[in-house]
Length: 124
Image (cartoon, rainbow, N blue to C red; front, side):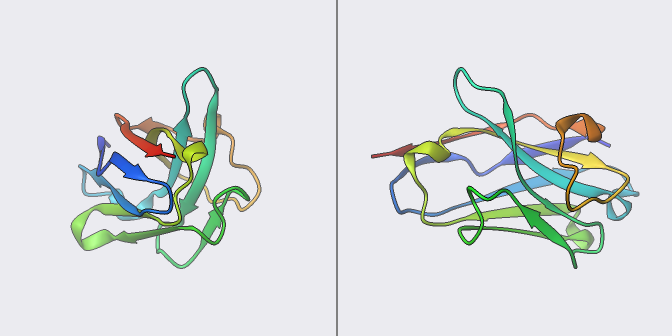
């Protein structure tokens, strides 16, 4: 599976962005997809995940209520709708796949394939 994230950019505090993650491969619908981010000088942080069927999602506390993860398996695409953005949301955002679903284990080591990131910059 190959993944490509896009949709990042520069936005003001309080603004919105929608990130997309497009995957190649016919087995995309079998994968659970996670979103992670890495701010300058910091480690990679879990943001959100959406299960293979789209019916289950999980979010980091820092983005709960502001971000929404969804997917369109017909388009091999996963989305991350981000609203009420804050300067602390500034980071490179990555999407990744995993075979198993978990609401609690969101370590990046649980994910198999990673896409190139897309930069989100929130100005104050």
